[in-house]
Image (cartoon, rainbow, N blue to C red):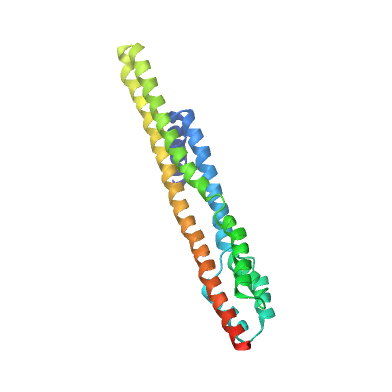
Length: 219
């Protein structure tokens, strides 16, 4: 019973795609590219570049306040995330002036942030292209419909009209579905990348304050 239902569903999907014409395959290809980019970005942002900023900073603070800068650097070296990499560059210059520490942090942040935002703009482009190909398929379907109906026998006009409208509506539906999906993925990933960048800004300032306080005590 379940196998029959699955088979019926697959046949329905195949018929839906075939009735939409060539632009259905174009939209599916673009959609697949967008989903692949989103999966790759999610993997990088979630498991490689992101870290619990507050907990990480608390751990660093304990080392810094106990005057163990090398220990703090080791903690940063144990992670490949973006925030530890930026803070590590500042810690390496902890015995220098605040301006030099700031310059080191800014230089590393300028190197790291583009990697966080990498390929996210492609998702917006893919969403727009999917919508446009859906519209193009709609226009193609309507053109074919009116051309066929104008030269067809009266008995065939209704069938040709139904086929043409089906092609037009199917491409519109799939184009919008792909665009909405990719836009939602982009919004999620953009918020995640923004969170990482905001933590870099926030905890870089806190690190400067900690190192400045430490230098004041030493002087």
